[in-house]
Image (cartoon, rainbow, N blue to C red):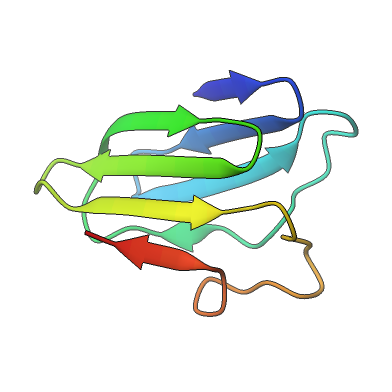
Length: 80
């Protein structure tokens, strides 16, 4: 789990990443299914970074993320 002042993120054993608003507790988007289980999870005010057990790195820009406008395939995601 990663907690920042306005962002709470949790990665589960079933490879899902959950992103919540730190202010309201509301889910910001549907669960994002990762390619493999998360090894490291970091968040800042506007970014979420996940390193998976298969060494994949994913970074999401979550500043404009809302449940109605974001699906797991349409979030701003950068894969390195």
